[in-house]
Image (cartoon, rainbow, N blue to C red; front, side, top):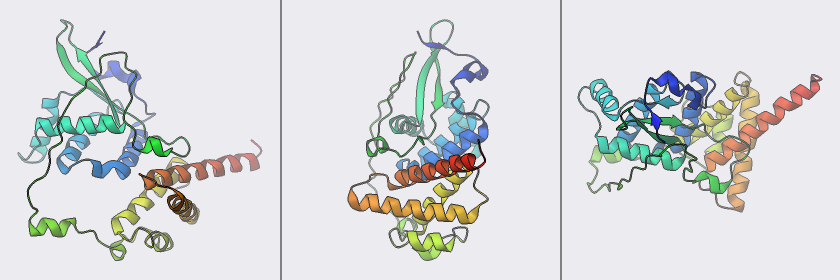
Length: 266
C-alpha cells in the first residue's frame, strides 16, 4: 500500500534529524564529500530540495514542477530541466543521501513523491566498501525507481572555462585554515580546495562534539587524524580518503568526550 499524500506535517515521523541545525550539519558533510558527484545544475536542484525540507527537517513532498518553478524564478529564468532534476534524485539515491517514496491521492492516482534525506554515516570509522555503497532501502511503500541515462559531455570547453577548471595550488588556501594544518596537508594534497575541504571536515567533527571553540585542540586532532589517514592510504587503497579521515576525527573526539566524563566522575 502506497503512502497517502497530504500536508507535510503528517510525515513528521519520517524525519531522521533532531533539528534543522542538525539536518544542515549532515548536509554539509554530504556535500563536503560528494559535491563533485553532481553537476552544477544538479547541485542547484538539490539545494532547492533541501530548502523545501526545512519545515520538517530532512523531509519534503514538494512537486517537481513546484521545485523547478522556484528555481526558474530565483535564477531569473535560467532554471534547470526536469531531466536534470530527476538525474540528481537518482544520484542522491545511489549515494544513500535520499530515500524516495511514491504517494497517492485518495482516489488512488499518483501524487508527488516523498523525499527523505538520510543522515551522513558517522558511526565509527567508515569501511571502504561503505564509501562507494549504493542505497539500499527498506520501504513500506513502493520506492520510486527513476532510470536515467547519464549525459556525456561532448563539447570542448571554452578557454575561460578551461581556466576555471584549473585547480589553485596551496598558496591560494583561505586564511581561515590554520597554517600548521595547511602545511601538513599540502605535502600530500597541494590544491587549495582540497586543503580547505579537509579543514571543513575537522570543523564539522569538532562542532558535533562541542569542541569547535578549542582551536588548538581541533588543529591537533585534525593533524593526527590526517596522518593516520595517510598511513592507511600507503598501506591500502581508499576510494574516499576524506570520508575515512572524518571517521577518524569523529572517533577521536568521541574518545576525548568519554575521557572527560570519566575524569569528572560520571
